[in-house]
Image (tube, rainbow, N blue to C red):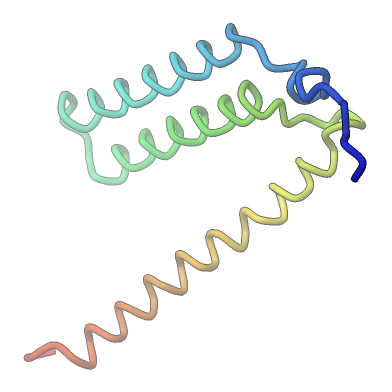
Length: 114
C-alpha cells in the first residue's frame, strides 16, 4: 500500500489563508449585523427602506466574506470556484422562491376561512 507523503500545509489554498483575512471577515460581518440591527430598531423608516438597507448590508457582508474567506475572484486559479458560485446563486433563489410560493398556495387551500 502506497502512502502519500505530501504535507497538506503546502497546498496552495491552505497557504493563502491568513489570520488577518479571517479577522477582517469576522469584523465585517459583525459590523454589518450591528448596523442592520441599528437600522431595524433605531430608525423610523418605511418597511421598504428598512428592507433595502438590510439587503444592501447583507450583500456587502456576503461579498466581503466570499472575497476575504474564500478568496473568490476572477484569477485563473479561482475562476471555476467563482463560476460555480455564480451558477449556484440563481438555483438558491429559485428554491427559496418556489418554497415560498408553494407554502403560500398551500395555506390558501388548507386554512379555515381562506
